[in-house]
Amino acid sequence: MSFKDDSSSEVGLSGESKLESFLFSCELSPKVPFYTFQGDEEEDLEHFLELRTVCLGEGAKEETNVVEVTSMNHQGKTISVPIANLHLSCLPMVSLGEFELKAPVTIRLKAGTGPVTVSGLHLIASQVEDSDLSDDESEDEDDEEEISPMKPAKKKQKQ
Image (cartoon, rainbow, N blue to C red; front, side):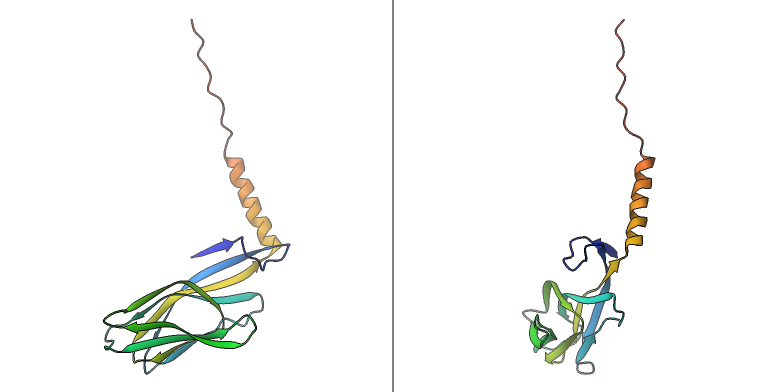
């Protein structure tokens, strides 16, 4: 699934940004207690992780499972924040809405043995070049040419 994001505030005056989204999921357990999400090293792409749900997996025990994320704040400093405190009998799943973080992001099982599944979207933002925009505009113009204008209905004359 992909779409264009025309409302991005980080777009330059000459272009738009294109935002593509891909399904993301990781499972945390004692064998894999953390997962680090990193984007590609390409300069013109920005990678974001939009977390949606955190839920206990099959075989979870009656214990508290705490999941935390580590990322950078607005000052560029690393900060860790708990995002879910799950328990099988009272809160086996939490919905985070659209909790968006810029890569790199580390998701850690801080307490408990899980398994805990974290899911969401991997978002990739890129600049659309002017040549790409002109191609899109010409396609729109072609579509408009195919549609013939509506003509008014002719009235029958009375005899």
